[in-house]
Length: 529
Image 1 (spheres, helix red, strand yellow):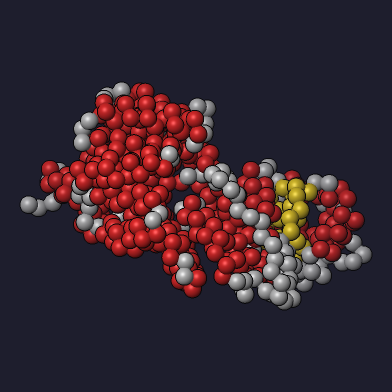
Image 2: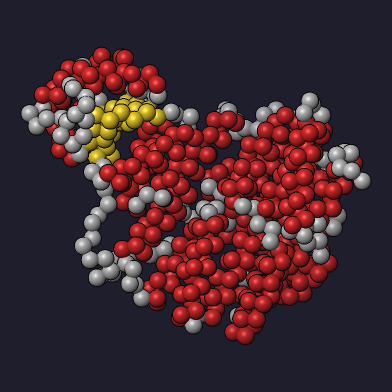
């Protein structure tokens, strides 16, 4: 039984997900003013009909090249080949242009037609001739024809080719506002949202582009004004999964800023965000050092009870990953939970109870863990409207059901109650984790081919892109185990390669998974000794 939402092929759903991600990343790399029109143009090219006539105004040659390259990246993921046709003095007339359009359309479904500024004459004779050939071109050049023109060229098209103009699928503009005196007067930047950040992935990428444009145009901004803006940018980069950019931002921009301001608390929080990335990447020793040496002492010195409790909780998380379950459990029960109860923080108390349930489940106490999930976590998140935490908790309930052998119900929960939430939120990492859990259940049901597809296509690429070393090695180990279980021709050799890669990472990171991977290799007689 294939992994897919009802009435939607899995491959189509996966392609849409990847396209959205790549399109947003490409749009974010352009100047902020180009974000919306790039989104519109890319969507039209991908989802529109085979024949389209689109008009683009991009007077700056350098910006035009940037947009074209970004479009090529997106269209490659959409399996749409592109061709570029330069129309200049070497193209004699409209008859030759028609021939070239047909020729390029035979080579690629998207033709970028780069028209020299003076090719369409002021009198409109060439536009009139192109207008007369529109039916023939539409029949013979069945492609998405994107005409890159200047402002005057577009105005002449409307005036001299009215019938063709009526066929236009859209007009898109890529310009960057020229500022004569950057930084002379500070521009206004819309404030960040207050409370829970419910912005979509597209809105977050757009905001990143806006902030970067503001920073470029206001280089002399005072540190006090920069602080909240840089803080938002770092969190946005982390939230969209761009770990390298977030890490560089925190190290090179935020930390020096807080050191200049003497903002001890803000510096400690930023160090904690850096530790988050080290922890996500499996660099546990460095993450633990930061927590103990650079976060905790600051919050204790400042009397920050909430931040101290949160830091102690994260220290326990690292100890849990390293297999030190008893100490992790002690910290949550004796040092973290009482602090949140004293503060009256209902949400943080529920999160802590969930972490206690994680440890109980790891220690083989599923009944107690299930009771906590259903009675002390889920009701709180539902009452608070915390959709993401609710989905995570439901997924963990499904994990317990799977361990009990209730595979059908566990699979239903992951597919119908968990996966749609993470897709809607644009949470790339959590979606990959959920797909891995679906693959685990499919493997247990004997559906090995589909499980392998998920591991290869929907987990490994995500973790590689995010640099999440621990999740990557776990996914590789699961892939290898499934290959060994299927035992088709070549599976054994592929499993050995994948396990060796996983073992290298596990040993480098001093993770307890290293011993388990060595055991798998030995049992499968893939490693000497």
